[in-house]
Image 1 (cartoon, one colour):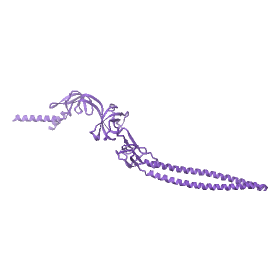
Image 2: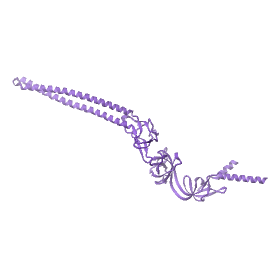
Image 3: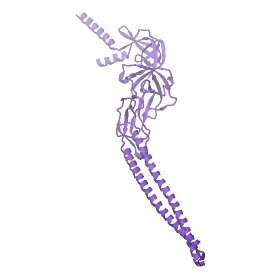
Image 4: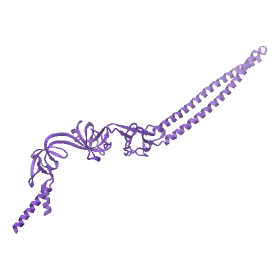
Length: 405
């Protein structure tokens, strides 16, 4: 009876041992091509893009205010209206200019009538003076038999008439100059109103912004708020408002830490996964590596280098602004053994793994090589198709012993 109980206990212990070893996650020792890579998050951008700027308008119409705006991400065709600015100030300017122009023309017409009346009066005075001069001449010529005193009086009257005629002529000439200058000033005023009216009419057309080419309308961010422009926002002249990217050629822009930038060079192949479509994988190539570092967004201490990756093809799911995970393939080592990183443990300067050996594990020292984010090369200590523990099995056993006690 006791013998049977011991047999049952041994069987139970063996069953527990198998169960425990079976619970330890295992990894394979694989032979093949090993890739040294670097993972970075980036954002999709168009290689070429048309920028729609806010129009340049005169200060007299105030600041531009958005009254209508196309929805972000909307597909637009050439000539579609994408932005409408509040035209009320411009329309007021048109009304003011038209009113000023109408008043200017009326004043000019009135001025011309007054000038004509003045000139007619002056010319009439001139004719009267001229007649007086002629009469004085006749009297002077007929004064042969008059006394010397009378002759002198007639001569003085003649000189006075001559002076009066010269003065009348001078008045006419002076009035003509004054009238000419008055007309000139009024015409300048009219031309100014004409110019303002033309400017206002042209500015009114600028209040309605249309697309110069087809594309996807990507709304820009306001420098003051940091948010994308929306209805009611104000903006300065010539400020970027909308991007129309060329979706036939796309690139991913990533920021590489200064520690890793030495590994990156033009021509490296890249695997690209959109976060929104993780089951899709695209390929690309590094086309640009910045020479100067910039501050990482949100900090002034960490330096990064902007790197651009040209995608091999476009896709309807790939749109500017989309976040992507980029795997940059730095190097490829053919025909080597490698295991998951979690399987390798370090004690001082030595590395070891727990190799599966029958029902248990054998702690095996290994010589390691290069590593990437998931795997590490094993130069010595293992062979292909070996299996290794992904965690330290002794730690798990000790924990179970503590719990059992």
